[in-house]
Length: 424
Image 1: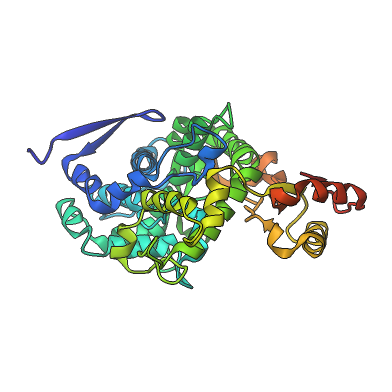
Image 2: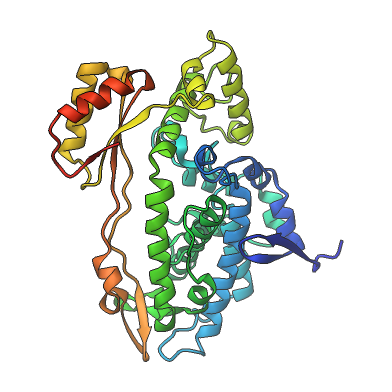
């Protein structure tokens, strides 16, 4: 097959995704193909039936968007007054290949069901660490050699880190940046599309088209945005907030993730899931590649049928919708004493095993980036009231087992509430 042959993949979110023959070989590698069997949103399909999409199509989308963003940086150096060119002497074709490969591979370290059970990795590791190790491993050496890129360059852009050059940091931000990284742009559009949790989204084409290189602190090269893309960036943030509220922090989704983690903690390292080690995932790359959602779902079904198997009680809760019920939700800042007090008192009254206290991870409200206006570089928050006033999203949940739901609700009605929370 000719090395210059171009391939096309039709994607429901971005249309046609075009790739080279060498990129197709990288997509066909075992670490990338495994992502076909990792749900993007864990068990969210039990709440939103359409949310069955996988890390595989997300990774393809991130590769596509990162390439579009790179092209905009190169194009816009001559388009916008005040924009900077890439550093002199770079092989831009090489760095474009590196960026697209890094975007494709940034999620190969994800565990079964994505973020739901990342706490069960060995201490000090997260999925980004595993991604970096896989990119540098022999599992991807052949495809990356065919693409004529250095695996070390790919790994640095894929997972970031403190040792990046200014150029590498700028390119890495095109993948993982908070304001307009391709990872965030794709998952917001894709999660909204498949879940239906948000009807309106944002203009990703406009956003990417206005990306440019700008001088940051001390003159260091940074990715910023032309003023013409500010409205699209603001719409991205409102879409993100809506998805956090309606999807990522959905209380039933949260408790299913919790029950999944409880099942895995009992099943990993047993004959049900021998790929793990004593209630945790293994750091071994071979074991990592051999474990996907498929094996976990099979183990859950087996445990459901046999009370003697580890994780049986959690398997039943997952498969028969016997999940814990929301008793109380606080919308205050992290550590709201009302939520903790409700959980502590509920445990005293109904038993510790009947109550789950879930302070969800918060995303920071503050966000800023460089903005190019009339040839002058400033901060986006100076031009955007939405960015200045963006509040953090936080919530804390208290759940009770369905067996004690009715008496727990009756007890909560008699208990005076403080802290701005509300019953579930």
